[in-house]
Length: 245
Ligand code: IPE
Ligand code: IPE
Ligand code: MG
Image (tube, rainbow, N blue to C red; front, side):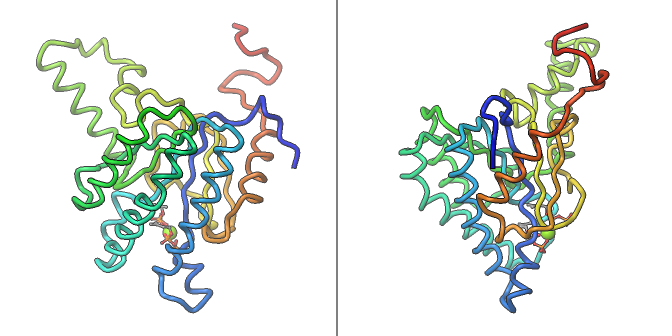
């Protein structure tokens, strides 16, 4: 696979879907699919890091996923906790910096503690930013941003006409990160499922039928190669040179 280092995406976001179907195919309980999915997370994180990609955002748990059976939710939270505990040394060693988006305050206290610890321990790292979307919903994030801006307006810190795209962006959990250049969704569905609704405005979308536990380095590289074939226009015509008015 020939990848051009200069045109790699700065930020890749992934909807990691298909764990349950993978498990069913194997005649195993759904949780075994999630367990197998952790291996794919490790492989893709390593690959992103080696390629020098700046940010990798992984959709691990949506605001809607709370509606799943309690046992599945508990298992997912347990897997997340174990993953973070096991990865800390490697993250520190490999300069990976952890951050999150979503309702961290809705997560079980144990998970929150290990997250906060990992974020603190990796804060000084300057390699890949690993951004985990946990109890995340794009609409929820926008509602929270709207509330913050309204509160500042009420306090007289901000006039409504001063609210622009930059101010909304700055209130989102992703503040400071570039928008994703590439969104990958595994598992065959072609929908966003409430992921990064604001940030994905001009992202390139890549859907694959490969189920998340089967997704590895080769598939990731294939998605990046596909991205490098795209012509991004951002509303302009095809012939314009970047920066040209
Ligand atoms: C993705 O796999 C993991 C989470 C949403 C937490 P699923 O559990 O949604 O797997 P399918 O879509 O049922 O196969
Ligand atoms: C999206 O997958 C959420 C995550 C991957 C965490 P879902 O499986 O929850 O999405 P739907 O229900 O198929 O839209
Ligand atoms: Mg699913």
